[in-house]
Image 1: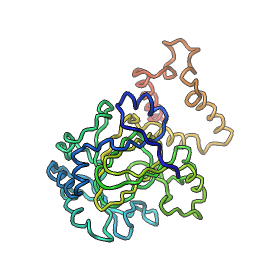
Image 2: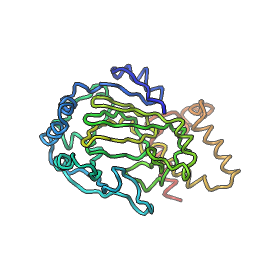
Image 3: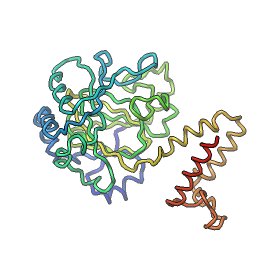
Length: 334
């Protein structure tokens, strides 16, 4: 595996101009090194937990709990009839207290609360630990709190900045091109929202998943310490392994795909096109290439007077609304 490219901390304008267009992940060392949360965690991870407790509003968070036998890996049950973990509701303070209790155990349960809205759960902590880079991106800061756990290889429908505040994390990343070799699991029965790869990248079963070797050839990795950040573009697959007894991460999803983005379009295409005869699929491939994927797809309706282009026209709120109405009309009448 090759390491993820590193860039120095920069402002949003520089990031937008120089780095986001590359559509590749980047590590930004020390982006949040001046956070009080990071400084407290450097001295004593339990001091950072105390900051959680002092700021907690008492709002319940969803907590994921895996038994000791799973060694921190959250995944499907072996028979694929459920999951290898359970969900409970608890405050972040309660989770914090529990993490302190089990921090010294050699084989603890796996436990974490993921993607908790900081404004709802720990607003004072949010105010005290700002990230100017994302200030104008419309991101909702979310906190991840737990022990040594693994988040299965998945992708997001949004761009993401993730900042390690306490502990250590390794990100293992695969480009979208690797999708055919990652053995994607069910699209609609998922661990926490998005589909995941069925392969454990930390212990791959090459006999069951032989094409994964090809994905490994494209893999990147990033080892992050407190204060370090990583940018992960949408649709880039990433496996996240937290290795310390106490781990805390803050992430910022932004550029959210509206109405499910291409993912819902993909599922509908599977319904409408995938099981048609090969000749029909090839014909639809031409339509998609012409209207969606070709470099001049946005000009596919230039031969029609602008006032008459309808849904064929350029991106515009009125056109978007026409598209939504058209899709709802067709689906509701089918």
